[in-house]
Image 1: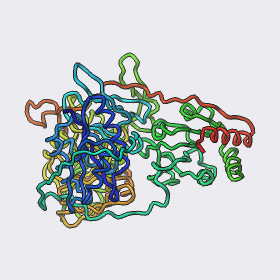
Image 2: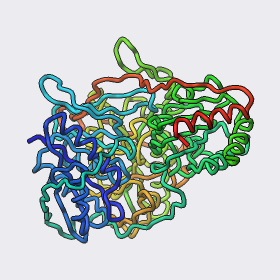
Image 3: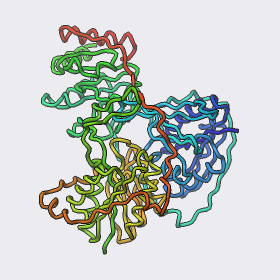
Image 4: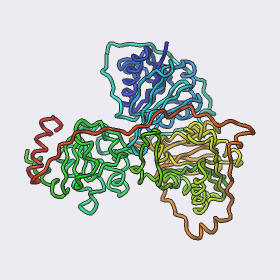
Amino acid sequence: MRQIVIWAERRDGRIADVSLETLGKATHLATDMDGSVGAILIGEQCRTSAEELFHYGADRVWLVEDNRLDLYQSDLYARIAAEIIAEAKPEIVLMGGTSIGMDLAPRVAAKLRTGLTAHCIDLYIETIDGRDQLIQVVPGWGGQMMVKITCPDHRPQMATVRPGVMEKGTADLTRIGEIIPFAPAMCEGDFRAKTLEMVKEEEKETPLEDAEIIVSGGFGLYGSEGFEPIERLAAALHGEVAGTRPAFDQGWIPESRMIGQSGKTVRPGLFVSVGASGAMHYTTGFLKAKVIVAIDRNPKAPIFDIADFGIAEDISRIIPGLIEKLKNQ
Amino acid sequence: MSLNIVVCIKQVPDPEHFDQITLDPATGSIRRIGIPSITNPLDRHAMEEALLIRQQCGGTVSVITMGPPQAKKCIEDALAMGADRGAILCDLVFAGADSLATARVLAVGIRVLGPFDLILCGNESVDGATGQVAPQLAEFLNIPHVTCARKITLAGETAALVERVVEGGYLRVEVTLPAVISVLKGINRYRLPTAMGIMAAADREIIEWGCSVCGPGSPAPESPTQVTEIFESSLKRKVKMLSGEPEAVAGELLKKLREMEAL
């Protein structure tokens, strides 16, 4: 039986959204290659999370429960994942491109001496020379090029996918699957890099990935009032504030609010870009927004090529009117 | 106390000029003629962190890269920042190496450089942006790794405490040395090479190795992944430009957004 295996990341006692998104993609790929889907679940008392994975399409879950594995332990997580994968021999392994996923996946790929492709925005199966290959599409050179990557001769084919890029399926609460308990041997030497604790730092705002409306500003705000108009517009729209890399470099937004290839990928219902010309490494972060509005004074700015609505106008001339109208309704 | 630190750096095309990169329709390959190369910015932060640790603990800072002959420029810059010696792994057979092959070659080079306590890298490069090399390098050297480091505090010569950024906070990680640690931008502000530094660096050693460093008659390290096609992304939408008096434009936009249930 051909298999696709995902790593199910846990956050605050539940499965991270990105893992369910990855699982959604895995179930589609499994249909295309007539295979099944397995998930690796590591943590402390996480059996209930296994049920959730079944609901979202997993056929089996390798369950690794140990109180020493509640926090991410890079040495052990990598060894456990590699052992399970070596045993199960899947065709494909997918992991969420979170800060932990991007730490775990490469180490596992190196243990298995196989290929790994980061930040895939599309994944599909194509038969090449009689063998099913996973086509892994990644943005390159700031996103203006797309690159197809394959791993023709090594298995598994491994890929990471950022949060918000794939869509999770619909939960089927009646769906069940097989739990395979896995108990790795452990000793103190397995904790060369030992995570002692997770320190939470309050993020006041909604995480960008969860926002329905995002207002994002770029370097075009320079010389006006900086980021203030963006913040006011976002407040009037009940949306979240974000920005481009130059906006981050200016210190207008924290790194967690940066959109684009080196920042966040979002798919809100409405994305309003203000004062950004539309470099590909920026636009690649919100291409899947349902509606995109672009405001920039330069009518030839490439941002208008990817927008649904464009306003080529000075920010100071258009934003106050917008805010006023929103307030009055 | 004294630590031997190795910093891995990479020469990358300047991201400010990525929009000048074009696709050759005949060959399907990338044209990047005239695009300047720089040292990957995060690698400069790794370099700075190494210098700060050397200042505090004593020891040596070696810098290593894999790349084409012109990547030697990055090594020269690192020496001018204050590195003690540099090494470049340069061979035609290394061209097109993926992260696994790169990590394998770097691991060989680092072993040949001699005993080490700490290996520092930038968390990711601005071009490939995979962030994969550091953990893979650690695997080939059979030592632990920590990525996304925003603070490194040495605990004697045998361990370090690292603040490792995750979504919503950070992890406190205690790692035994030797280890590979890859750093984020926030870890420090890096210094720029000075004229004095450039002069002082002039007689420092730059070691050059080809593929033979991997062993006599050794084949090129294998890259499991391959680029099969490059195409220009077409993600264009049909834009409706709204123009006229600002107030009318604002009203029209909000009306359209409501119609589309985007508000």
